[in-house]
Image (tube, rainbow, N blue to C red):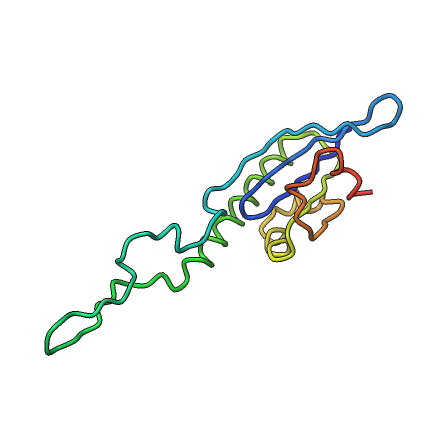
Length: 146
């Protein structure tokens, strides 16, 4: 049976199927990959209008005009991305006929991501590495999970 390796960060999702050839060498195939636009860039680049800035009016009654600042927007976007990644992992692991799977997620999101997984999927997790492996070559992926 095949094993699945999932490498994620807030901007990238990569899933690989690992099978073995007749000589016992691992064969790694990319089965799912996407990049999240919300996970890239800074918040200031995403909010380009002046509505969140404090402006001063002119005249005798100099009043600050606030249009509502996004105090918790970054954390809400982060939570939303982690929830999306967990849903994608749940769907992938349930649909694949695999005996177990591996996860590589950045240190900042790993624990929260695992907590969002369904119990059935979490129980099949063989190893979790707290590292961002989304940008390493496919040929090196398997070596991190031996």
